[in-house]
Amino acid sequence: MSRLRACGERKASQAAVSRITRSSQARNSHPTGPRDAEIGPYGKQRKKQTDAALAQDLSQMSVSGLDLLHTGNGKMSKISSDPGEAGQPSGSRTALITQPASASRAASRGLASVARLVKLGRCKNVVVVAGAGISTASGIPDFRTPGTGLYANLERYSIPFPEAIFNIDYFSNDPQPFFSLAKELYPGSHRPNYIHYFIRMLYHKGLLLRMYTQNIDGLEKLCGIPDDKLVEAHGSFATASCHLCYTPYPAEEAKHAIMNDNVPVCTFCAATVKPDVVFFGEDLPEKYSLHTKDFPKADLLIIMGTSLQIEPFASLVNTVRSTVPRLLLNRHAVGPFEKVPLRRCDHVELGDLEDTVRRFADMLGWNSEIEQLMMSRREESIPALVSSGPAVSGQKLCQSESSGPGGRGASEPHSRLKSRPGAQRSTDNSEDSDSETDSKSSASSGHSN
Ligand code: CNA
Image (cartoon, rainbow, N blue to C red; front, side, top):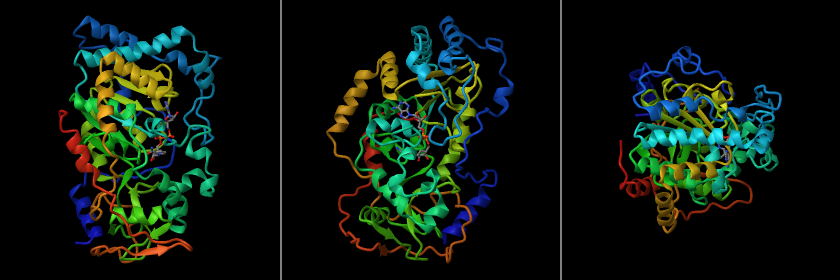
């Protein structure tokens, strides 16, 4: 059955699920949905408080991080229109540096409140929403951090505007900028850090309902978060396919081609193959639709290391129930956390993510367990997160404008490479292995929900 036809059938059988396409547009910072309509002044709608500790926690929530959200003139900062600064309220850096001890204490109380809720056993369905900021401690630059982010260092990719690197039309015309970036991001050369292992510990404790990541570096899987607990919303390098007709292509061969400055070419239509990383305008993986079940079920939402600038991912954070605590751990306030006053159950802890997560783990009493886990994993080799078999067909709901020449008959793919001038095709692919097996087996000691 051709992949396109298969997509059509899936579509028909999922009539209620609309296509979900990645958008390069910054999110609307106003939370949407019925939840907001219910929010009243602080304390007014507090219900079902069953113990004094919880009541105290909730009363502290509304003040967490507030001092950090104001600029010197007491007004809320605006998001800069400069893509390099997007998501960073002006003045927030100064506010962070000069914050009085009381502000710091208020923010830490927020973290402590959430830790207390976890310890009280009130958070058993934790959803984590993450972005590139969780991997900067592993040495992978994010997009938007001024100075170090990829958007500030684009000269080496020779692209006219930052988003071009993930623009499918641009890729169609010239895949080289993305392939240069892919060479840096391909799983295999970076290790998960303390933050990844903290999330893995949530899983190990039986508390992780699901992690939704925008990252494509594969470090979540590498640290042992099992596949069924992970939604890689912007795809991954684990599979590859033709960017025009979506014929699957062996991911391992695509990697070898790209790493050796060759262009992997579709055996069916001769268009360029790309790893199944979701570009702007492309559909998100089918698994993303799990959010419709997960977010209403969540009892704690932790948002880490993301500027919440990319839709539809950014809006996910607005789909938990209004009574559910949302904890933002980031260098600066983003998305709905830029609004003052904060929602009643919102907490913001600003600063370096690894420091914050270490403090959080300390409060939970998990630190030594996490360190031990990291030590044990460090002794293992890093598997490459590229499957050795052919790419899995039907990974996506259905890609947009699927009109590639001859896309209706995905035959068994064979490798065929279009060499760039002066580049040699490498044939040695023996070091790649399937990581999914690894992460599943390594995580098997944990509890699954
Ligand atoms: P982004 O827009 O670059 O935002 C990252 C956020 O994390 C910013 O708000 C930073 O301030 C914050 N941050 C970075 N480092 C730290 C730190 N050490 N401590 C605290 N906060 C920190 O990236 P998003 O994830 O929001 O954007 C989504 C894009 C980025 C996705 O489509 C990814 O594919 C893409 N991306 C992924 C990777 C990766 O896989 N590691 C790397 C670069 C870009």
